Length: 182
Image (cartoon, rainbow, N blue to C red; front, side, top):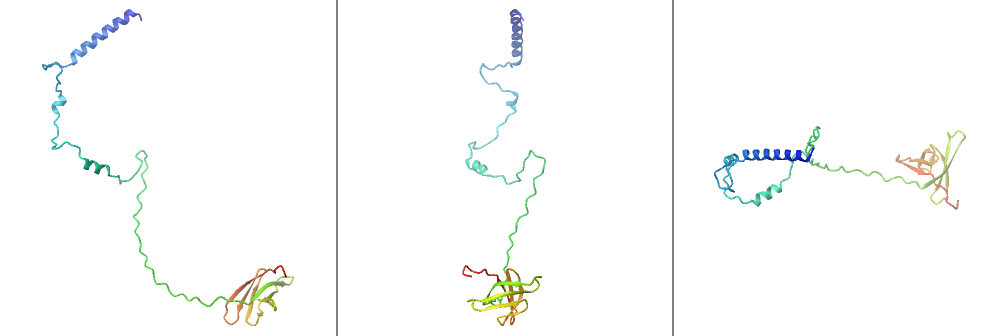
């Protein structure tokens, strides 16, 4: 497009702009520069407020409010989980503890289990017991009486179970390894 045609189009557009502006601006009889009332201003009626000052006490009260409703993501279609039922504290009344009879003291055997021997089939076992000071050695099989008042109930590779004949209380003697002096 040539420069002359551009000037002609510019002049036509400028003329159209002037005509539109002339038709759209309302004519009034008021002096120039005075504000004019429009249709929206005629419908406006201000509220009747006695004191239009900012009330800081009400503002502080609103700022201190916290939302206590259900917190959920409004951008998801799934419903939030239902709230947990309130936990009611249960007061447990402790019943008086019954007096527990501690029973007889544990059985003590003044002998130590230091070895055993069995036949080729392993069905007949004999255990070796020694007194606490290693002066006397006793050899007893399952069902035999040890030291006059204990009965040997069971013999294994690691322990021997003995029972006191008079009371029926039992004790387990663990196999003791010999010390460095034999």
